[in-house]
Image 1: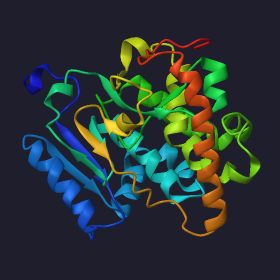
Image 2 (image 1 turned 60 degrees about the vertical axis):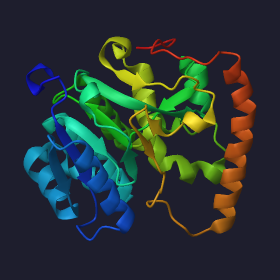
Image 3 (image 1 turned 90 degrees about the vertical axis):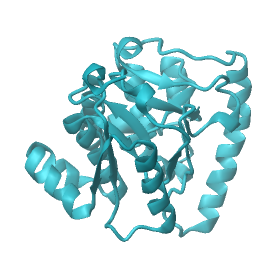
Image 4 (image 1 turned 120 degrees about the vertical axis):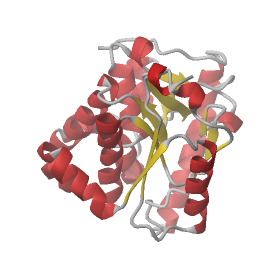
Length: 273
């Protein structure tokens, strides 16, 4: 397929603190570029991210700096960058097994992430799964990315709206979900569930069996996310350990419900607005 018939442009976008990347990150960059030699490659360090916000999206400058955690700013940046430029965004711990040419005809594509442990998504929208934000592609100006950007802003301006996702999470562990549900995959998944044209405008790279944990955190058949989670704090070992145990227990319980729904999922949600 030639670029002239593509909707997503041949462009890869990545970001990091600076160019002094770890060995794993350098390997990720090399992997993406070698498998997609015709693609333009753009890397934004922290200074370039701030310059991008200042020059391309000055209306969001105050919002960008209001996020309490750096990772929230760079989540926000990735949506703005792909919305403005078009192309694919990848975290620095994603590795591909094949090139991306087959995905260029989509207007917008996101990966299936995993079965969700958020009762809010399950109860409000009948959505027992989430999509990831570690990798995605879209044409410039795609309305679904615009909706994500609006919700990132809304989560900052309206904490009550944002807290709906975490209200059923034990208070001890809510800090673990702050990023996920205000700028990360929780927010992106909620946006998808509430997006009225999801089935027509967004492609999700579902695995053959969504209940098979071995197929989670993959960019379809194209690659895999290693989940380095370098943004997470490494202190408070006991709370992190308890949170892991709680998530594991929730997954076992909720997986039983998901198994009753079968292997496949669709982009049709109840109560979608």
